[in-house]
Image (cartoon, rainbow, N blue to C red; front, side):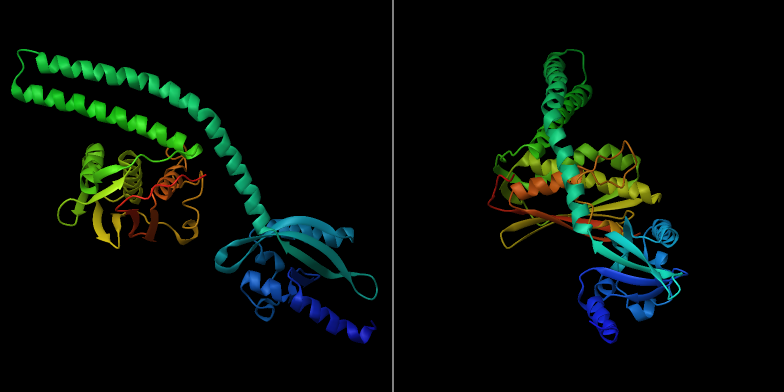
Length: 369
């Protein structure tokens, strides 16, 4: 190939290469950008021309450091840099830079060939999460054993206290009823703790749901009872918009209860984070096309757009350390898949979020790995 053909050859490379290729002058300003680069970054080479190349990166200092090293050393350098892609989503690239020189051999700029390794980075992160999940599986049995032993003692004692209260003399009917209610709630909360332990085990190990006919409205009412004290303390109004009458499905009551407790707890947290004196949670049920839909809406902080793709990811949480594990929503989705249903959400920052749970009326439990 002679020199006259070189410009056309280079244009062909820039147009058809799958890599982000750029050239910058001695001041680090963009001169040209490949077609793949335009697609990844969501901007044309003409529009970006003259822009400092470092400003295209999510970490300008890192890219600037690579360019300076290349200019000073006069040889190719390699590094990993995240560019700012379309909609602000980072594009992780393996970057190879080489120095351009003028006719006298003086530094004239750099050319960079950047291979998109975002998918590989995601695979690495997923493998780390899988390893962490495997570790949870290894310790879950021991945790369940340690928790279930004291829970069994509490359950036995609460049952004995219930008998004592029923047989005790000298108590007014009002006092007796109040004590019996307290003992009953201790038993309910103990059962709930056992169910949570089972769900952690079920998340790490494949377990099939146990289905029976249940009334969704009754289940939601029981769930609300668990959280009533917190609702009062935080001055949150709970609105119920249920369809008329019972709403029966064949499903696993304990699994569904865990989903609703988690969603309501998240709604409470979102309202608290907003910092207003009052809040509102709305529960709505509807039945359509063989499915029951339960919506949990809150007037909380909402979910920022950039966070929405992450909220079902393992160990991802917006809560401060010690307040969240990042397992709640992944467990909810895992449960609903087992029950043949699904979960979705809509959110507006500063206004609130609505999670919608869908479960089949007739039940369709599946074991998933």
